[in-house]
Amino acid sequence: MNLILDGHCYKYELESLANMFFHENKVRVVEEKDFGQEEYLYTQYTPESDGTVLLKVVTKIDGKLREECFRGKPDEKDPDRFCEYHLCRMLYRQLEEATGLSLAWGMLTGVRPVRLIYRYRERGMSDAQIREHLRRDYFVTDEKIDLLLRTADKEKQILDLSRPESFSLYISIPFCPSRCNYCSFVSHSIERAKKLIPEYVSLLIREIEYVAPIVQKLGLQLETVYFGGGTPTAISSEQLEQIICAIEQHFDLSHLREYTVEAGRPDTITMQKLQMLKRKGVTRISINPQTMNDAVLEQIGRRHTTAQTIEAFQMARQAGHRNINMDLIAGLTGDTLESFCRTVDQVIGLAPENITLHTLSVKRSSRLGQHAKEFYLQEHQRVTDMLSYAGQRFYEEQYLPYYLYRQKNTMENMENVGYCKDGAEGYYNVYIMDETHSIIALGAGGVSKLRQPGGTLLHRIFNYKYPYEYIERFDTVLRRKDEIVTFYEQSDPGVVSLAREK
Image 1: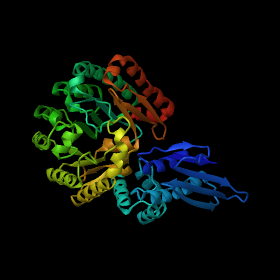
Image 2: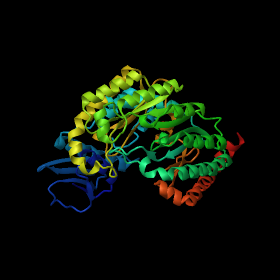
Image 3: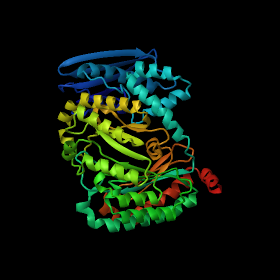
Image 4: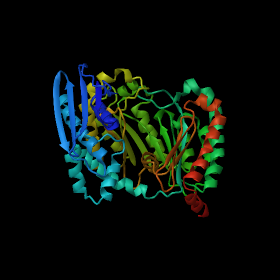
């Protein structure tokens, strides 16, 4: 499918919008007027002598031509936004008619739609005005507008806690018992990578020891710690404790608001690990069933059972954990609407403090990617109904949304949402998705995101993706961490100086 740009360069939004309708037939942007294709999307910008512009969208889909024009005078403050919006609006309406697909998020393409709510409120718009604007001008459904408004209310409280000197620490444990067929995270099965783990743990501790003096020198304040992966509990209790002890020894934890370890796979969880995590001050853990349907678990490559999930959850309660998250995925292969609804009800019955609902994302590195066309065609309504049911049930049980983001290539371009009981919000999740403050990531696959204190400048530092690369090139990993000092001292030394005086 060609997207033809004629007389303008509004590529990003138009391409993103078109791709929401054509997952199975990736849109290719071209500037030449090639109408020889069986199907195409043509967008035209023509300035007129009287200061107005003529905007036109012509689409040919399934042999049918559709055409719409708009003539108007661009907003002097932002003429590009004006023109881009009207081209997108015309394209959306034609694609909606051609495909029969009405997107719940309408024309919105961004991964952080909650930011729109903050922007509108800063302009003085009431929630009623915001609702009308999103519904009328962007075709967003009431269900998604409700979700945005509720999420913004909760998320804002967490964002306001962050200070210019705040940062969070991410620890990568890139090992899993097995690889799920939908996963594109950089992780290695324990069976294949077991010999790498001792050296990996040793070097990870060295990275901890190297970075701690850097943040101390800069006067940065650690707000949250998050162990992710992979599955952190895939390594032994002793190895996990070594890493936790290194953090405790080298970082100032006196300002810590949250300490999360993704226990993740129920088949990696033991009472010994749970007790150790509790003893070492971990305040939040995740036990992630993804589904409570054993047949689906087997089909997606998970080696645990529903019974093991329940057993792991009960063990965590016995070990004293009082803030537990459980991850669920809507859209898993083989999962029906009925079985998904049973999963939601079973998890609610366990009463975790957090439930995170993901929409299955099919990415290029996933093994499902090559079958994406058939997959998307089958899943649209099923996944929409799953998310609607879950959102309603969570609301009934007083689980409130506190963070939300959308992924590219998700089912119906739907969202991932964190729900929680009041007071059990996951701070790290909010900070990393909003890019509120710096996230310093240690370990293989870690990507540090440095945020300018009091500003908007961002800088990323990449660790090597795979454990063997991380081990082989560890000296380079450490050298790259010196960029932290350079970034802070160049971006705003005054803020850092104030932080040091505190």
